[in-house]
Image 1: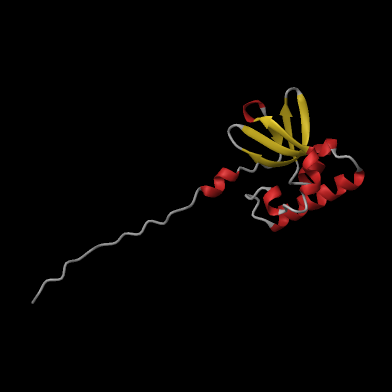
Image 2: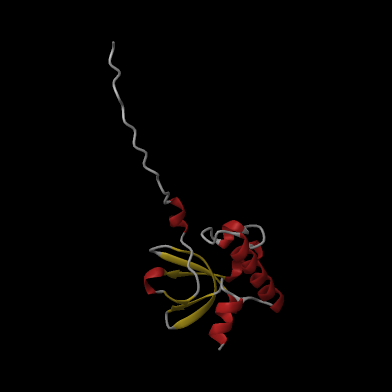
Length: 123
């Protein structure tokens, strides 16, 4: 029931398993080496928890969700640096929620254009 509430009401929240512990928060970036997340569990006050959820909601609904939250809302998230957790990606298992990889932004779709050169004949 709690898991369903998180998925419906807070779609930006992810749950990660790492080192036998469960981490709940917003994933900033995950590449092949490092996973970084704002850990909701270690926030200092209820006000901080409420504010992080508000910022997550803004990021989720107002961005394309491929840009990391700390890039999209850089100034607003300065206060939450203390809750950043960095983990080794090969030992992390994301059980619920979205994963952002900034490396995917560099991949562009290239439209191929066919150009045919025709030689003019002189008459």
